[in-house]
Amino acid sequence: MGSIRVAHPWSLALPDVARNGEVYMEISNRGKSVNRLTGASSPIAKRVSLHGHTMSDGVLRMRPIEAIDVEPSTSLVLAPGGLHIMLMELKKPLIAGKHFPLPLTFEKAGKIELEIVVIKDPPSDHGGHGSN
Ligand SMILES: [Cu+2]
Image (cartoon, rainbow, N blue to C red; front, side):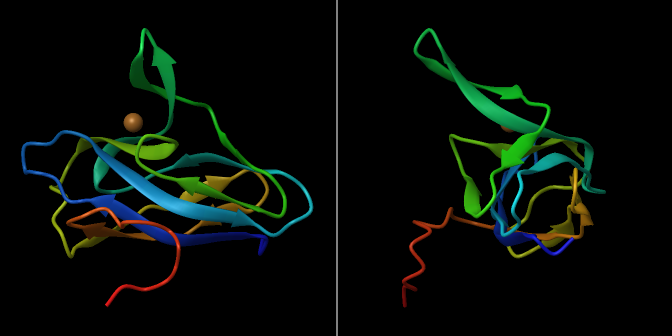
């Protein structure tokens, strides 16, 4: 406990007909050893899986992965086109301004409660120099 921090968790608002959604965030490991994100769950989706991407025949495809390793003293960014958490078979639409719980399970840190904010547009960068 205590060595994992999650910052800026977000999900993109989608049309009502969307079946699946994606969640992104930044995970920091302040511990001295690798910590693995092994899963997540949410009341908003029937299943939640961890996804990565692979390039095959010049096409970027996502694929389920077993776990996401967070190396010690590093931050890992889950972002569009890269690692993400997939919400499969949404039970409720992702509406901008709403939020939903998504507890994460880490191999060593255990369960981390997390609330995901649904936003209309993806954040432009993670630079931290606030606009407006
Ligand atoms: Cu995916």
